[in-house]
Image (cartoon, rainbow, N blue to C red; front, side):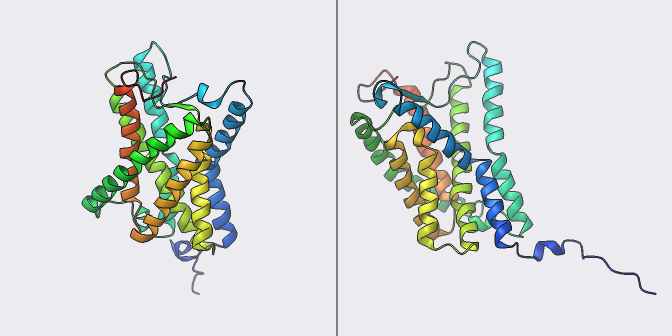
Length: 266
């Protein structure tokens, strides 16, 4: 008598998840990452606008010391924060592998390093100058807080940590908000226009802690990034561009703050 044969190992990978599963998965990924950051930024913004005084008289500090006066403990906390912030990216990679796609399907791999670097550098050059001008104008008009990109002590690991932080921000945002989110929304049957709006508004939302200027500026950047992703099919250039922009902001502020008159400081 022939024994009953169970499910073939790995056969579940070939089954297309239902719309409900894809929707719930997407919501959970966002709730564990940048969706939660968007809610946090909204709460922070409400606190800022209801606080006495104008927005530009308040500061939004990034990359602050986690253990003032204790550099080795501070470094440990900085590296811990960077590593744990990338866990949602690892989750997305796992989910994409389960559908036999992997991160390569969104163009986050090493198959085209030089085109990715070149395109990313061009994007960063174009967005960087306009972004600074927009921030200064928004702050002058009272729509933005004073952004302090870094407030780390002057220790040997300061600049390496700032560069790692820039890379972490870039990988997290571009993989989830562009590559992963657009793939899932496409699978859920959203139109390209609706997907573009969702991705760009989400990007703007978790920058709302900076003020209205931060929300609008990053939402516009989100539109540009989605259009470029649709054109190239790769988040690689976007990660490069975002990394260069954040390195410029973090390291540039560390080098220039208090030395040039046009750069606002807290």
